[in-house]
Length: 249
Image 1 (cartoon, rainbow, N blue to C red):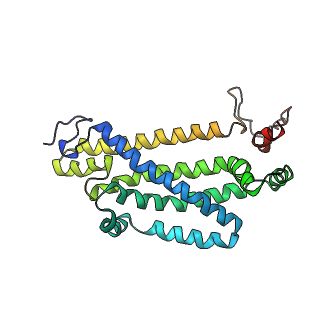
Image 2: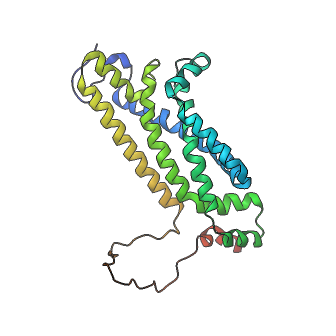
Image 3: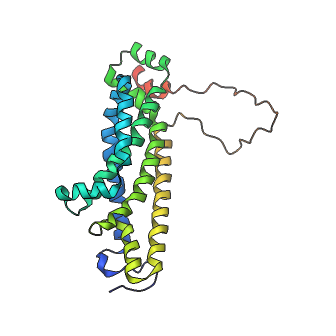
């Protein structure tokens, strides 16, 4: 049964409501990003500690990213079957080529003076990484997460070729099967809106995790061409201050 022609009229063969497909899409898109982040953090730290490791690591992740997802599915399907796992494993691998460089660049951007101050305050290497380097690198890491997340949301639809595991992408298959263009519109629009919503949420997370970053006030105006902007009357807090403020307590 193909159902009606409305935006939310989902064919019964998908065995999901519209919001069920959205939830499935979120699951299949975000779990790989989370898994990729967990894997990328230690790998990136190794690349920071051993600089010679970064080029080959980047080469390997780039080669893996170049493997077509369909080829990945064909390889994995004998081990994981036509399941969500078969879709999510390639997506997690694809995120590494984005997340590892983002984390490496973020950690390398931490000022040497900040690291020296943390070491002088008695921080161990692990404490310095968790309480100084990672917090200061958050903006760069979140930027990488935004790219990886939007990419993952778009790639989930490819899973529709293996047992209808493409979530919202399954609507594209049914659009051809039932000759219903509204299903294709529903799939494309919903995926785009979902990507925008998740991207905005990540921006909000970045703002919550980096309260020390300057915020543009509503009264701020663009400086006219040729005008000289006056320096602020008070110095801004350094990134180290909010990270290490609890040490003095």
